[in-house]
Amino acid sequence: MYARPPSLLVALGLAAATACAGACASKPATDSSAPAGAQTDDPAVQAVRDADPATVEALRAAIAGAHRSPENRARDQYRHPLETLLFFGLRKDMTVVELWPGGGGWFTEILAPTLRDSGKLITTNFDTSGPPDAYQTKSGTKFQTKLAGNTELYGKVEVVTVKDPKALVLAPDGSVDLVLTFRNTHNWVEGGIEAEIYGAAFRALKPGGILGVEQHRGEPGPVDDPKKVAERGYLPEEWVIARVESFGFKLVGKSEINANPRDTKDHDKGVWALPPSLENGDKDREKYLAIGESDRMTLKFVKP
Image (cartoon, rainbow, N blue to C red):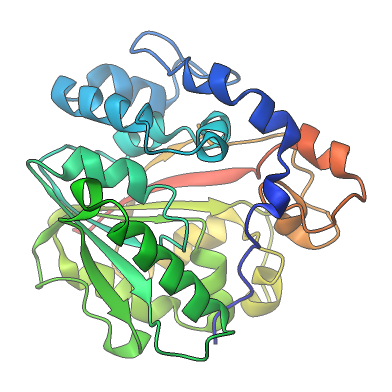
């Protein structure tokens, strides 16, 4: 059973974020500057300076693309897609797997056009044959509809349907350059399926291939009951590193590009109190909008 996922944009009610959508979209980070609040010596900022120019150009075009909604563009200020993807080592000629993109496919709409001409994008999707009122069915159908609605952008995306995580095969062994997961680890921990998913990623990656992990970051400390801790969406960074390394990966880099010191991590309803979910409705809404999206670890692992 999968963990409770965050709800969709609550009535698309990101008032503060939406108000800045045009401004945020019009100010992508340049090779010589960092996003607001980021350290200029952060590895993700440096990665933009050092990246393959053709990949940077393709990513910038995808991020600025007209296919992206104002709501998704507004989230760029929190998610830093250019810096995050280049920190993970993305190149436009790679074979890339995106794990659990969710119904909205926020990163898919950036990855697909970037990789379309000279690379390959493989994504997972939920099985849509389940009960129609189940979250997995709804999310899977939404993602399926998104891909089908723009074949020019998404027509080359290969989709792996997840029916049984224990039998998950993402790609032929040793054929993938980069595996990415964004804000999913807590769901896998709570669902008891992280070993199966990270194992499938390890098998699919080439030796020297990269696993990029972005995850809501909890307070440091011991984790006596991982499933219970994961219910709030947050996990301690050192615990995540040790856990991923236990599946054969080795940590090779960390970035603070997605850090948010305003996130106190003690919210009613956990990480889902924050944008974009705003699950507490009008209660403390302005406070949560002022905090913004969660504090997140951004970790880069290699398959030895």
